[in-house]
Amino acid sequence: KAGVTQTPRYLIKTRGQQVTLSCSPISGHRSVSWYQQTPGQGLQFLFEYFSETQRNKGNFPGRFSGRQFSNSRSEMNVSTLELGDSALYLCASSPKNYGYTFGSGTRLTVV
Amino acid sequence: GENVEQHPSTLSVQEGDSAVIKCTYSDSASNYFPWYKQELGKRPQLIIDIRSNVGEKKDQRIAVTLNKTAKHFSLHITETQPEDSAVYFCAASMSGNTGKLIFGQGTTLQVKP
Image (cartoon, rainbow over all chains, first blue to last red; front, side, top):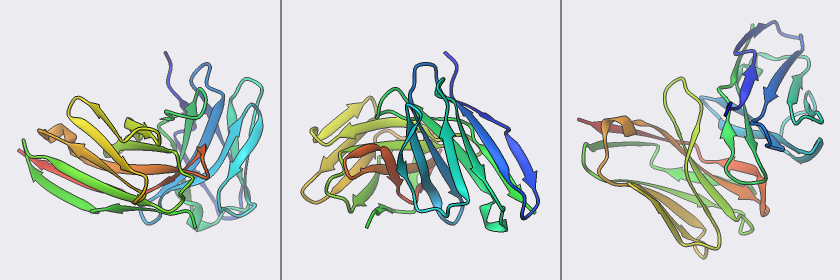
């Protein structure tokens, strides 16, 4: 059974650019959550989608957005990148609401 | 506010000893409490979780206890082994909605052979 797949694994972007990250959940999992991980702030919740609807949103600026498709795959987008957006972005999926499995993440570096 | 405090931030034990990590949460409506282990350069892995209708759960050398009245929960690892060395994160669901997890700051556990 394939795990949670995140692409790309690494990304380098310039300040002001935008970026789209992709997450393919485990087959059958309908809930997808996104987290930002940094050494200083730890793991911070971005948003959660269930059946194409955003159910929860964290305290991040509007530059951070996401969506979920009918096949449960999810994307997150960050516009007008700032240096402080450099982080590991993790996606996690669950069949319902418990037991979230994380992907390996996308390491974003903003220069 | 939404907050989970985790202690200690670092923990060093001898192989074979026990390790205990404690977390306190702020939202009394929280009803789901997972623990994740993250080795260097790897993804967080769920090692055990507990729901609010249970006071204790055990899985081999790992156990979690929950005190809803005091709003705190703990991870207990017995007979520690060097491969237990990692960063451990606790988390709590917010407002009873398990889709949103708030994580503690993490505990770096070092098990010395």
